[in-house]
Length: 316
Image 1 (tube, rainbow, N blue to C red):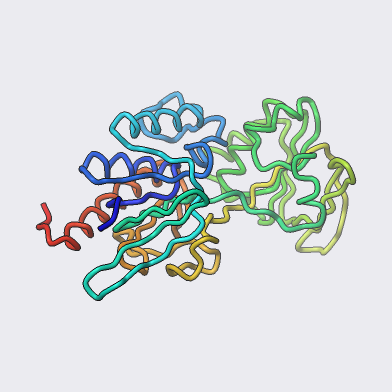
Image 2 (tube, rainbow, N blue to C red):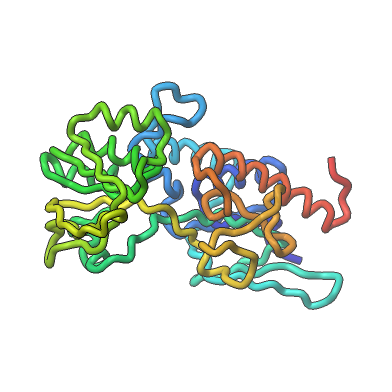
């Protein structure tokens, strides 16, 4: 009836691991990935909390390893951007999905959404205009461009802390701006940050505007408690304000929370039958590579069980 048992959308940690488990289970599966496989892993200079690597591992190397393992097991990855998912039900007894891309339509009995997320924008004046001209969302990619210069980092969680430590290898001074009284990063990161004399903190503060015409020259900020506004000069601004899920193309298809993350049950089933979600696009508390890998495996197993029930095959 359909050419695929499963279509996986996204080839980050969750998608690659879902593909690995699905193909090893004998499923007919394809992965669609609009960019280079690896997702958010590619933007991490070092990953220090992934099991099995006591000395840490570079994000790009980890991505390459996960991809190689999946491909060596027989997984096929297509460089295609999923633009729309259509539910087809010609009769009460039969239904399937069509995943539409620019180049082709893929038919499938089930879908695993592993479409990930991207760094969220602050939404302040000149942010868009100066992106790539002093505004960055990746210290590992752009940190070396600001060697021996003064930069500002905006954020407050573990990701922001990791990026600040990455920046400290290059920048002369890092002003770490966060809106809370305290950082929300884990203690191990806070201890490392406080031990670095090049990093200074400004808490209880929000960004109002990025300054500069052709390139960044500073920020206009406001203290939340006092409403006092001030300007801070810098050559670069690194923004880590959370994640925005890549789910615009499936609005209205499945239930999402107010931020666009996909809501699932404990078995990673989305609100529409035959659709599962895992990784950074899923509504949850912890966005980590190890969690994404685990969810990918769980989604593949849940999807396999669904297909067995759909086709009248007893579960193992």
